[in-house]
Amino acid sequence: MRIDSFKITPEQPVSRGSHPDRLTALLVRLHTLALRLYPAAFRTTFADEMTDVFAMTIRHANSLAALCMIVLRELAGLPIAVWQVRRQAFAQLPPTLQRLRHIQTAVRIVAALLGIFLLSTLQAVFSPAYNLYALAVPFAVALLLATVSLLISVLWGRVGGILTFLSGVAIGCCMTLYIYIMGVEQLGLVMVVFIGLLWALPFLIFGSLFYQLSYRTHQTASP
Amino acid sequence: MTEKLTKHPLTEATFFILLSIAQKPKHGYAILKDVETLSGGRIKFSTGTLYGAISRLLEQQWIEQIENDQPPDTGRPRKDYALTMTGRSVLNAEIGRMENVLASAKRRFGEDIG
Image (cartoon, each protein chain N blue to C red):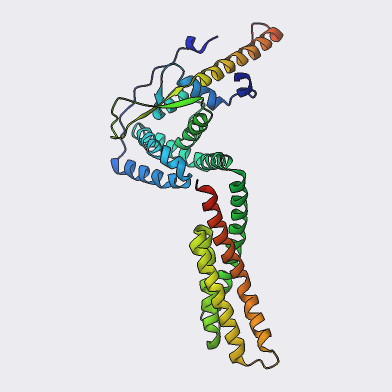
């Protein structure tokens, strides 16, 4: 059997929507926002069309129940569709870029977990109940900045990477000065600097990693 | 080539999208409604799943995008989707495969099946 012999059902006439235009506009706006979850290239090609199709679909819904069903269908389909489109886009990348993206994702996850852990710890340190020693305030502030920078890096690798690296340097300096001013006599200068470096090290590593990965991904992706 | 392309059966959604645009090119909304009708209401696409599938079919070159001359309400040029020669071959091959499956079942159970 050839496909030409198939009878295609003509398009159904559509009914006029009865729900307020303001609700339609709001739903279209929310749908447009949800489209940001898709990769940029996909959005460039299909976002306008998807918005038009969604607007037409909800405009042609003839009852509130039908409208709810459309919205629920969109919500339910969104995660799968985003995942499939992203997977499809990922499969088209060259192997080098795929490997870089894998590493980038792993670094992002670890950084996000570390950032959340540090943020919860710092919340306790900065609470009024915690009697923070005045000399330790610069160190705590530097640690807070580094934590925020780390979380920024998860979204914006290059800028966040630089900020994390600089915050790491600040942490190292603050810790070194803190120990030095406290006058821990048993420790030599080299040991004091070493402790400062140890505190700075995770942020220096994460900062460099984020910057390098972001830079290299950009270099590999650009023709 | 077609045999290679249709090594695995098409998903129902892909099959109905190809079938929907088999006779004439259609735009996204028309495909959405047509697939719903063709599948007896079983397949209802969200915009995401529809355009995810369209994107994949475009990449496989089973369908192609063509400009629609009719100006739409939105002011943006409306794009229609049409089957390519490869897409038509794939659809024909899939229909043939389905006919073979049905013929086998009929041979086993007689004409009463269905």
